[in-house]
Image (cartoon, rainbow, N blue to C red; front, side, top):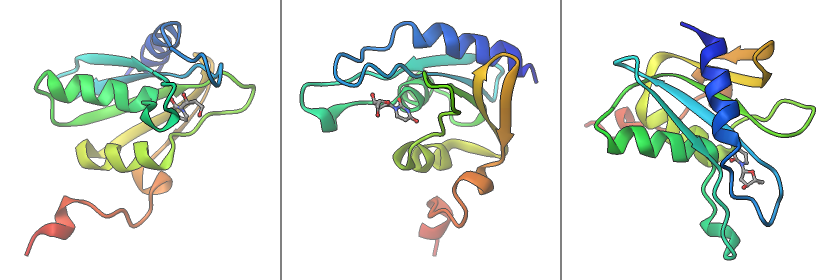
Length: 132
Ligand code: THU
């Protein structure tokens, strides 16, 4: 798996962030099961709660194109520090991730850390919990 390619796509997607309120741009790129890449940026709203994070933009694009399993997601924020997915995005990732999804938290294509899903959302409530 080419982490650098995914990070570069996330950096490109970040350019399109619509952030008039926070001025904090985030980009994300997903590698789906069939090796297709989907990207997303954060999209803010005057009604702040209607804001969509970069990760969910990318995930919803992939799902709406027929994907169901995500093998990796790269996220780039705008600060010097790493930007981790928010709680809502972690929950949305849990719905569609493969068991060994790689969560790539990047500053740029040379500085990144890779986490497992269990590391970012231990004990997640998932669709398995709804099975009788
Ligand atoms: N944001 C993301 O897009 N992804 C994250 O993981 C953290 C937060 C966005 C939402 C909002 O537009 C801005 O960052 C500040 O919270």
